[in-house]
Image (cartoon, rainbow, N blue to C red; front, side, top):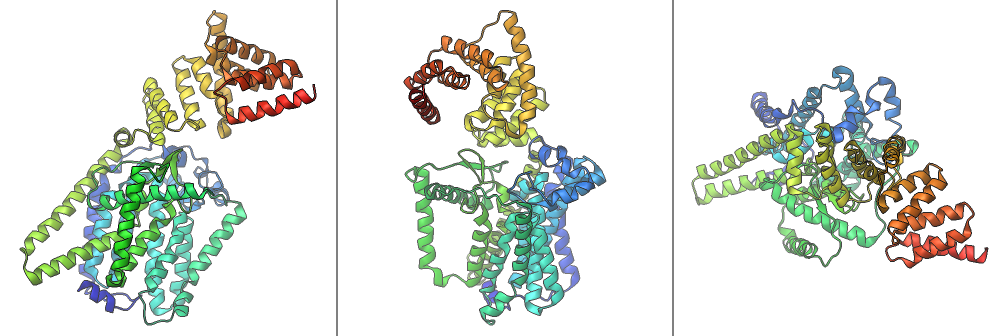
Length: 609
């Protein structure tokens, strides 16, 4: 019956509300539940993870003179993400309240409640049923899945972009029905602002296009013409990115890797569908190990699950109401940016990000479907009399109470960074980002040995990340383990942290030289680290001496022999260089680069002695 009412309604129209006060009362209920569900996170201090980068140590927000610069660089000071409005929002808060985290959290909560009210309005118009709009808005505001976006200040990009996306959708419905120029101009402005908050705003025109398929009265050329504000907004956005050189897109070109990434994403969607109904294991920075082969049991199970779902969909396609098809398309389109098909999204090497905040807008069509399903069951039961209607009301009420209590619980977890990260580690101990975050938290708490433990775990999960090696090296030095700390500093090119690492290396070497003067000796790895430091500092004789000591302690130390060959060749001692490179090629644990380099240079020195 609800579906019949939707089918017969005019696309793009607004519903006649019975009166202002019933709608105001429902809106007030949404506001109250939102405040109670997430109010406990308001006093949460800034965290050591994303808050430190986005706010506390972000120089861009500290002065209004930086506004032009905010529009000229990427969000993370790179060339990938372009979200200037988020930094502007942080700048406004910083100028008004400094680093008082209460107001940053308060703004997040206000945005979430405003979004819930927009959901109420939007769904009421989409379904021409204010009751469906209200219950969808209530689910949206209190469902615990929203906790990650609401309770973490950097979730601002999700909340603010959602505000403009939902507002744009409402404005489009008004514009599509009445063709008013003011509505189209306002639509263009809100959509463009949404793009400046988060790239996924660009999905909205495709969602609108799917919605327009419900309109059987207007021809497609006329419907497509109404999309011009979206096209203009995207054109302006792309022009800005191109003009400022923010054009990087992280994506693999290997079809096999792309397929495995997509299958990993599909596995995460199975979990997402369960979380809508039974959100009991919510945690920060959710991720999945990247599937390495289609022969993995989990990959096979995922393909079987979605294969069966696709078969059922095809068999019953003609029986599925058009509005339900639109909801399904909406859900899929919202998840497209995080499907690993558009860009690669991970939390570290070998892990795909499946964060719960990805579902912030994608949950709306699911909640609409849940409300419509319950209303359909309730109406059928009234007609057939299977059970007492009160029982169904108690079931629905119990479900809402369960969601509400879980949301409050998540809000309390989020108010304590230690509890939040510790909960994540209980579910995903191999998540390198979370392990590193716990290590940083331990540093701030003064527990350096615990920090060392977590940084080592992060390196175990992602061994090629220089940030984790730098953090571990610093923790080791703070405990007086100077040679072990130096080993971590010289492993990789520190990149943007070069100046910091060079200062730390210099300090560390001062202590190591004191230990050498006192007669302390080191193992092969220790002398290798000293040799690398001396070579990078331009002290070739000292570096050669250190590498020779490393090879004398461990004749199979490939890196030391390789560095010796490179140094001898640079100094013109070809005889010693040939001996070192020959030794490298005799060993078994050399890398492909070392093998190719040693072979090539050995051949050149043999031809030109």
